[in-house]
Length: 384
Image 1 (cartoon, helix red, strand yellow):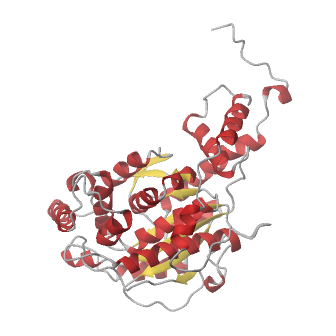
Image 2 (image 1 turned 180 degrees about the horizontal axis):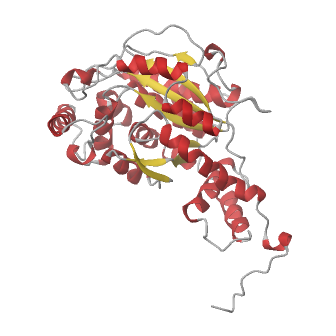
Image 3 (image 1 turned 90 degrees about the horizontal axis):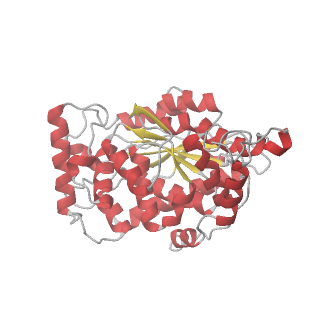
């Protein structure tokens, strides 16, 4: 897949390249699965994963989703000034330094499953020095306060989506982009890049922007989708709900608002949400699966789905976050999470835990014998 480099057309060209799942390949996958040496349905939720990925790839069995690459999109948020988080904004940049040094949970989980980690600065308030594993794609030094005006200009929102598209393309076609020094990218393979993408995020106050996006796209009230993020107390949580409600009201994003997806994104989203939306779109255009992480990824995926509903074909909900907005998001997206461990860390950690499940589910179609090939008797259809 070759995308044009005209920034005016990149999003539109990417969306135009996204098609529905291949129904014939999905039928083949279901038929093959029915002949494997196991009782029908015995792998539960996992049985649908390779079927959908066969539809994405247009072949059965689908390619193994490995190697995998995590893109941790990092940005700051103007709404932090409203006191929605007890953590100082500087923590965003400090945690990015921790990612690059290999000292975060995302690094440990990625090492466990053999995934590469690339950190993408799309909007950190401070400037970062070049480092292995870092892509400097800054659109702006954070968003504006969404309760006082739009979080982003229309141009910033578009450029952030484009940045996510380009990162997906680079990771899939080339592995770790050259400017990241190769350290943060996935292991190389014959095609040179990742065959599964994983969303990650970092940004103090980004659960507030996530709640606003989820409320705007689902029509649910602020109190239903606003969680405790990094672990705030009752008073701060109540204030956070009110801040989300205030932003939705200011921008006319109450139920039935009818505003365009990019307009919603610019009004209350974050630069990392926009980039994740582009990342999902870019992967869909390349027919590569994406394992979504938690509430920030869920909010970004809602944007992507509003722009191109077929982009969800290759999305897998890695886990269900403890954040209430994440449950609302994945239900609206029609996705079923593979892991439910009450996680609320972000970074891509929940998606990484789910990655072996996704890979194992696909490997079943590649490696498990059929009843005929193994010489195993099938269930007698005439018996109970």
